[in-house]
Image 1: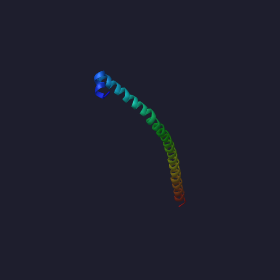
Image 2: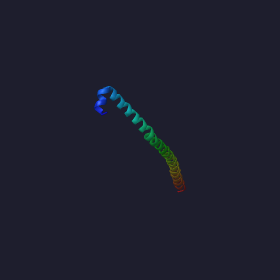
Image 3: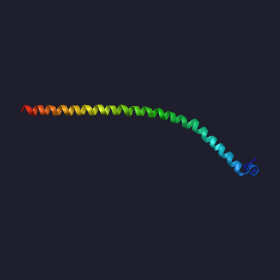
Image 4: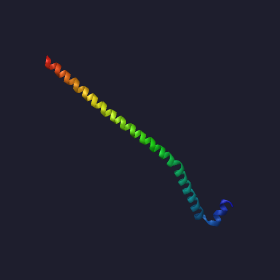
Length: 85
């Protein structure tokens, strides 16, 4: 049977409904086999990146506190030198 014969026997709405059902099935199988796997991999990478960002944030906080302490020590040393004069 060719496409025109099927269209004449069953009518356009029935053929369109079957075509849409096949399209939905195709999209569903594609999403479950391809997209979900990729999303799982991306989720793992995202978690690793978030952990790295947290580590960098902690490093920045530690560096800021070290710089602040160094500046305070330098200022205190300069004050002590000025008092001695």
